[in-house]
Image 1 (cartoon, helix red, strand yellow):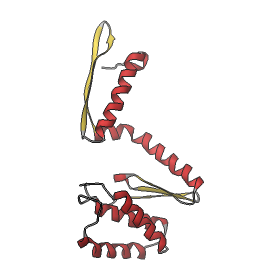
Image 2: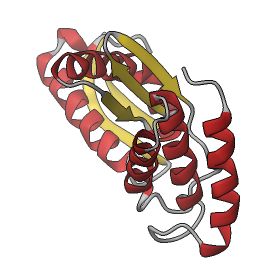
Image 3: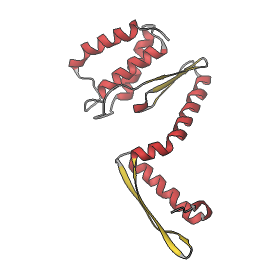
Image 4: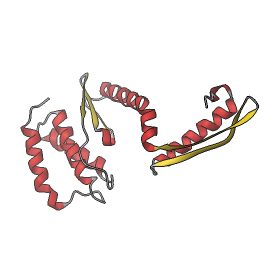
Length: 178
């Protein structure tokens, strides 16, 4: 109802506190309710803010800010080290090196359990680098490995998937080096 709570410091502080609480709750649940009774008064009538916020809506509202922070982080890191690599969960990974930046898509379906995804990504990336793969190919190997581990409970890739993984690694390494 067109409330501008920035003009009311107390209401704004309550809104910020509720937003922080919602952000924390959305890290473990798909939605949360924001309920701020008597948040402000408009034309002598007390106003309330009651709404359900989903994780998807929260991510949509904050995407441009989180993307900007990640881009800045990769650029800042890239100036300090030879290779900067930031994983972004379902959004893939960003790599920066010598002033060039690359994005690699995430692999895998809907996560069952993300335990071990980062470790498997790192292992795949380092393996790629150890065999002379490009940064992009190395990140693709890491993405593929982490994609396998998120499909199961626990941090290990199932033993019956390794032959399939070896074939995919060969395919990635046979591709064009970026």
